[in-house]
Image (cartoon, rainbow, N blue to C red; front, side):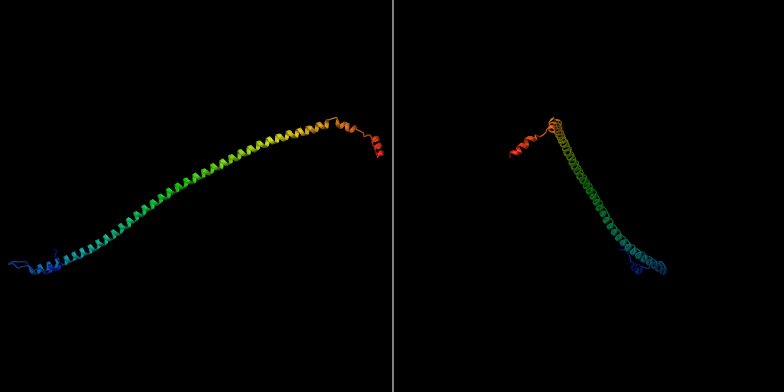
Length: 168
C-alpha cells in the first residue's frame, strides 16, 4: 500500500545511541511530505486530465465512426443515383429509337402510298387523255365529213310545203 503524506508525517523512528539529528530528520520528512502531497495532487490532476482526454477521444472516435458511416451511405447513394440515371438514360434511348423507327416506318409507308397514288393518277390521266383525244378526233372527223357541205347546199322544197299548207 502506498504511503500517504499523513503516514510520512506521523512516522516515528526509534532512537539509537548515536542516531540522526531529530530536527534534521523532521525537516527532511516535512519536505518529503510536501513533495509527496504535490506529487499526489499532480497525479490526481493528471488522472483527471487523462480521463477527460479519454472521454474526448471516445467522443471523437464516435464522431469519426459516424462520419465514416455517413460517407459510406453517401457513396452508396451516389452509386445508386448513378446506376439509376444510367438505366433511365438507356430506357430513354431505347424509347427514342423505337419512336424514331416508328416515325421512319410511317414515313416510308406514306411515301409508298403516295407513290402508288401518283402512279394511279398517271394511269388515269393517260386514260383520260386518250379518251379525250379520241373524242376530239371523232368530233374533228365529224366536222370533216361531207355531210356539213350537204347541209349547207340543202335547200328546202318550199313549193311542196306551200301545197301541203293549202291542203289543210
